[in-house]
Image 1 (cartoon, rainbow, N blue to C red):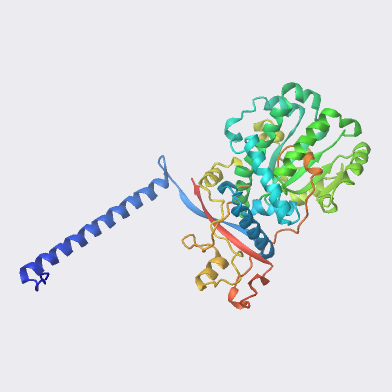
Image 2: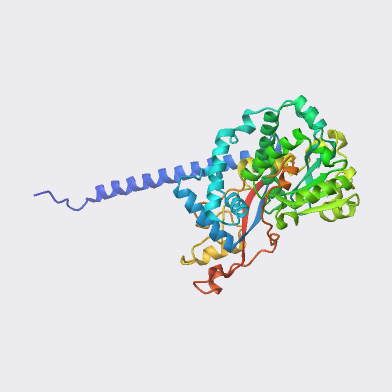
Length: 433
């Protein structure tokens, strides 16, 4: 029979109490060391040389359509179950763009998605920003003037092409078709990984589409020689198959009679909702541009006030939020990514009062909405945009800017999707010198 311990003597009790006090002292000491280390780390983040920095919170509004959320979630489960969802592409907006490209047909979208993953593997798209160097860019720009310049009033990057100045024969004297296609893909990847996130942070709303200006002065039926047709066909296939739904609107300017004949032919092959995105303006476009783009963001040759004289001109300056070093720091830290997602909850799931507060306000970075598989916003539009003209995609209404008060408790239990739009606010930090 085991010995049963008797009561502690006064001396033993005192020793045990002292041991307890020692343990408490050690714990308090460890806590203090942790606090000191944390403070030291935070202080190091606010120092750069001898200058102090202030931390400012950035909130990004991201509006999801409740019906679209349900389809995206269903599609996500399908490709996840078939191991077709690499973590790098587990993104709400990317999934939505592919669904839109196939009119929300899940089977057709799955095929398109699978083909895209295979293409990325074969083309090397995942590493192309690091392992491909386009040394001939300066010469290429002479024969194919193109590039991003500034943003429109909604915060979308503005892409400009001077299609009438393209010389496809000379272009292929300074580069090859294969190298140009790699450059094109590399620029698309940079737009998704850097430019769109930077625009999202600057505009404080999710951005993944561009406004395009296509100057077609001098373009006619003779412009589309075999070299030009081959190039456009290759680019269109890459863009349409792998980077769908990235065009918000296109303005074709300086369209003469020759281009208008060409356009009438092209237009007959397009979806009516695609052509609704494209506006042919002729040579009186300045007032229209200034309605949608601030003069300071618009090149002088298009009716704005910007010259980028200190950077060699607007067509080579690559002006935009992505050139702001503070914004780039935030992009590198992932502050453009959503950490809160609403609207994807199962109608049968209960929503707590705390969740309602976060979903409505979305400005407390210390609170997390329990939503699995949170998307990252890393997403596309680049040269040459003429390739997008022949892509077929559906036009959807403009994103609602108004933040919706998501008081789920005021809705019937089985009618939480009665809200047509839900708003997501993401928090980030910016270091200001």
